[in-house]
Length: 473
Image 1 (cartoon, helix red, strand yellow):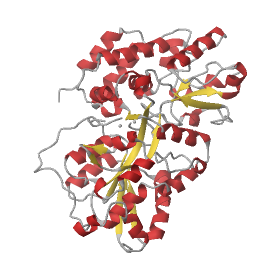
Image 2 (cartoon, helix red, strand yellow):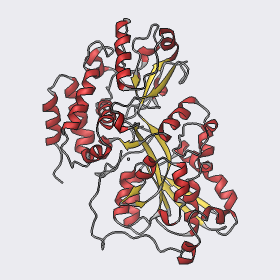
Image 3 (tube, one colour):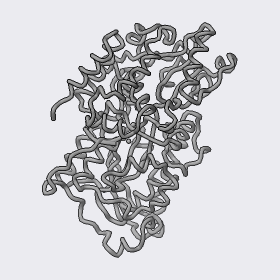
Image 4 (cartoon, one colour):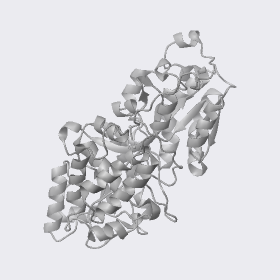
């Protein structure tokens, strides 16, 4: 989901890996973060492409074997050196990341200087083009990273990381997202998921309802709730100038469950039309829920008029005004006072639709990549790929690691722990498509088209109009 505490996005056209359309602010709603697999980006002239900074990790270092720079650092070999890290985290998030680096600094004597900026996406490009790249950068989505890989500015991390160890600690979905042009280009450090459905725990159990494991079971549950006199779904998307992203998230999640991930990637990159038959099929499945007058609290009028942060409020009534709410893990920030995530309302994974497409997840994540190839920089990247690098932030809360090596008991709350399990078990992971499409579409015609669609506009016309809005260049 897009969280307003994630920084402003520079939307890029790219390919492959992911929260949510937009995240509202508790006080002032605004746009959220970025999330999906980066579509392919054309390479620029190699002569103009920035190149990695000259390295002190020479052939001798390379021959010592991958995966041992963190060990050498702990032996004090690089003590007194400095590694610069540039990312998007500021204030509390920046402090949490700095605290997570303290064990590394104490164990190695390496000074890690972190700089966070809300203008990261703009400044990283300026710095790289100006020959002032940081040693390491934390990218809020893999699309921008892929752009630098295409330009030759990022070295192949498989040259110094223990790939077999990475395969133990990360699912293929995460490794695929960090791989660009066949090159391992970074390691994922932080993650989030949108593919979850909240429900009222006590009322759910009292009614005898069971967690659905398939889409058919989810629809059967919805029908049972209707038969019992209830309304199954809490759905709304009013968010001021950002209205519409909730619908784009739903469509993206369904598409990942009804078509191969390659179709999703092609759609994001506009290698297939926006109104491709696979996308239209996903829209039809979505309309069976959204436009069923028995399914949605307040019907389409409420979808268009209820503020995103208030969507789930009727769930806490007795009996619940609605029972199911597909929304990312940040939504408890907007619940009525006195309600607790995992107690008053919990969540389950949004079930698969077509079995052949496994357990896809629409999510987001931060990937760290080295620009400069020195032994101490390699040690930092190696450390960030370990479970220990996440521990301090995991234990303080509000952090989900994609690393399987992070034990569940490090998570201090159910919301973080359960989302981590979903992400670690994902067979396919993609970032939010609307965030990676051109701004004219992703945050423009796609959002507004969804509003028109919910307002009663013809499906084919709406999707054809979005297709027609795609910029030529």
